[in-house]
Image 1 (cartoon, one colour):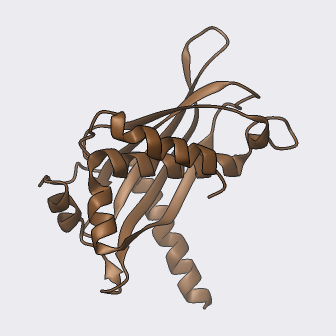
Image 2: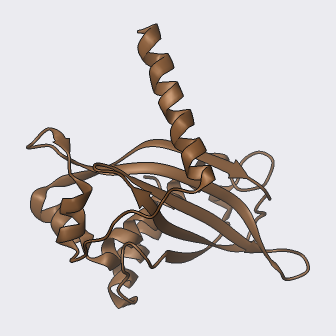
Length: 186
């Protein structure tokens, strides 16, 4: 991660933010587009969106209390699939925020949504980018993904996954097709 100052700021400020319910409350982080975020077209670089979304997932882990279990068990967060749709560019010095929320899950992974929100010229809120990622925690000692039921127990909640929406089903089907295609080529 090449966002050290933003990461340090997140680590310093997240203990003062409200505690999040991991399966209900979104993480909302405010940012501004700085010159080091820009590409040659003078808007925010495509790769920077992904890096900032890492901070959204980190904030969700920190403020939900899941970070304690991650450290205690030495689990490693892993994103193994992602898709993004860019809708509006973010220009230099433009403020924006990233909402990060868990949408649904299976036995071993979570689908997390990131929405990059900004103000349009008329002041209305616009979605600048929308991303879905499939993520999990990996237990190196067990050499396996941590069951989601165990994650939920660690943060004190037992809940069934909401049904995935059409966009999540399409994302998961696309990822499965890519995985199958790669397996047949190997």
